[in-house]
Image (cartoon, rainbow over all chains, first blue to last red; front, top):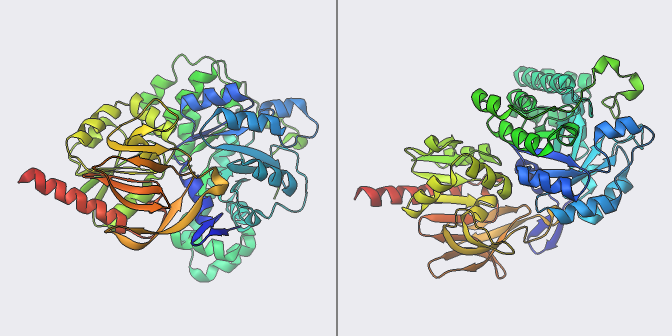
Length: 301
Length: 195
């Protein structure tokens, strides 16, 4: 929510919240669980870190209810680095989000990686001064989240699997739907809005501009420099890497290589060079081996 | 005028769009060889630590510094301003170190303190809409530095001859006047060279 704090000086506007995500473009946002990892990420050239108690692969392994991180962890990370710090709140848990805002977190991820707190409603993000990022699997879901006030979108993918297939599916779907909407005639838009469950005004904007009104990152399964470059070529504005860095054999090397591959995503010789001698990537999970209850991407709507 | 936009990370396409609106040809710069035949360079907003690391890694720091020392026009916004500064508060390092200024990083606070304001930018616009995102400000400026605008005693846009640095993001608005000012600086630098 925007607020005039001084004569002519306004905080929390859409432009300020969305602009923050614009500044992250072409960059890599890394999951970290303590100050030491945060420093490794910053040193590697991450544009932001996501402060968590556990990376998604460990959340999967631990089972039970996954909640907002202990504020001590978030604070430790905030004190360790000068780059922006993000943190996750459960879907619909606006009190967790308010706590993170009060602590001065720079961006909140209303995330399906945590156990949803509300099975019907997402947070009304327009009421916050801090910006939000939300996951989406298709254009309708992305525009519903933007309608609620999200300032940044990311693919959901399938978190903590080290398997890129779901992020690819979601990014391709979104890009393909954007192209379809762009080429529709104006009188087809209301029916399309109804069909994909998108707010009409936002769909109209996509029709006119040929892009989402906010930045769209890739997330959920990025494990190698080549994965990051693949997502950039499919139209991602940047990349979130969750478990892919600190579950690999050599986190510092992986982190640097993924940052450089994201910048130079069309330079194959370079990415081949970056990929040499990295050691093992995080162990992956085949998606068909997940039970329906293990699939995080179906959380939220 | 052919202006480059450093495209390692950050708000690149917004600058390209604004430069085109200001009547220039805009190209992206990722490698050293992309710097050839340019009349000026924009260093965009983004994360200054990330951009600086990639500039070192891909041998862009030294060539851009040399260009800047030889009168080549450079416009830095937000992270770009930090890269241009000779001195950074609470830090022993500087990056390009071309402008005789001291900057303070994240000086207005964290993201929730980010804001919009209307600025009177000397010689450019009386009502410029400026978007500040985790922005720095300029706390000290040397004698050869012209202060174009300030909020209280916090300088937010300065010019030192052929170098221009802004703490805010003119590329996030629809107002190309500041980019037009920079394109004009590039024209003058080119004329000075050919005379």
